Image: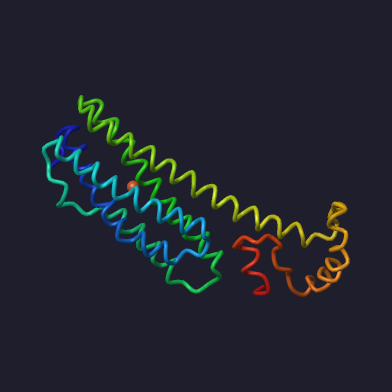
Length: 213
Ligand SMILES: [Fe+2]
């Protein structure tokens, strides 16, 4: 029953405990399914952080005099189901990576909302130790979200680079690239029938979707 701000905080902390526990089970599968090395590393790194976050929530429960178990976070369940759908889907590795980044960022944003509120409520209730624990995790979640944004941006930039190379009105290239120009012209003719693969070595959307259009 919710009759006070303390009830809301207690519920929220239990909800977050359930969310993080579910995430610990899901993250290894996501890391395995990711193709991009940077994305794989980010997910694996966040798994370690998440274990620490669960420990903080258990400490918070101790401070609040409540038991961490007994609640299932339905929102995390749903978010992780969406993530599983992405992983099970057929498709190119880069497109699947991009979709997994979206799924992971939805998780982070959900957690940021929860920890942000928990910190405020704990502060209002004078539970400073709990507030400090929530702040620590909140900062980790924000950093994880920013890292995912960075990975997403590099994927999108690779895609943009590729789109640029299809453009026949390209500005002149550097002298160093002149040797490649003849080849490029030949490739451009081919590209009218079939898009050229991305020249960047990264696992880009452009690269892995080339030739499938
Ligand atoms: Fe988390």
